[in-house]
Length: 336
Image (cartoon, rainbow, N blue to C red; front, side, top):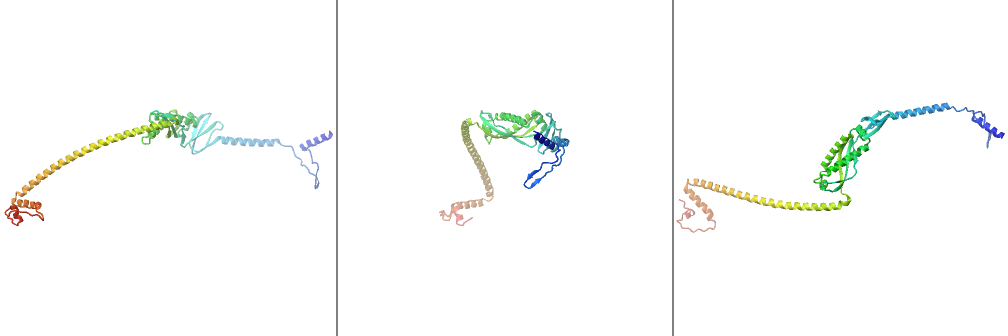
């Protein structure tokens, strides 16, 4: 028991720094004595000051980083204090705020595309179709968006509701074939009207966003009535085609009859005018002949005789006339 007390005293003296040296230890090379240097007690104030300094530096770093924020070129920064918008930043750079009191919400500057969920609507001719469309939009007033919508997702949800409502109204005024037919499609004007109307609704709610464009990507029929609608459409198109063919044949016959009548009238008028012109020409020619030949009757008689020779006398023509015939005198070389 005394030995245990002595060992305990030695251990306590060692911890308190009162031990001068350690007991020798044996090894293979011989007896060596290891001397223990005297160590003083630990100083808790020194370590406490180091801990306080590190804590202060760490807290200062946290406060500094909480006091500044960076605004990028492609975003807005909206500063809120206790939920209320106090300012927003458009220009990029390093900005300041009150730490732990003010918070920063970042919003994109660039245009965004929002894919709207597919919805079923009814056309004017009572056909159900599935519309798949999308919208291109942007933020115009970040402060109004945060104040009235709260978050970007809520603004998108509200915008989707407006777009669906307006598209349902617009397409409900058109027949299905007017929507899908490329030749008579009204999609372009529908997109413009939907965009304009949605922007009016968003401005009324003061959400601070603007829809740049709304486009219908695809129109489909529900699977359960797709085949029946296609069959009915084919029948309607065939009836329409037959009607067009009948109307075309009727127009063809009418145009041909009108053309024939116009041709006959034009020919009759032309023949009449030709007869009049010919008669006037012959009368004028006879008048000129009479005037010319009345000045020399003998020459006129000779001219008429020579003209008759051209018509009656050829290379092998044989004419038997009495020598006293006036018609034969010129042929025989006698001219009075």
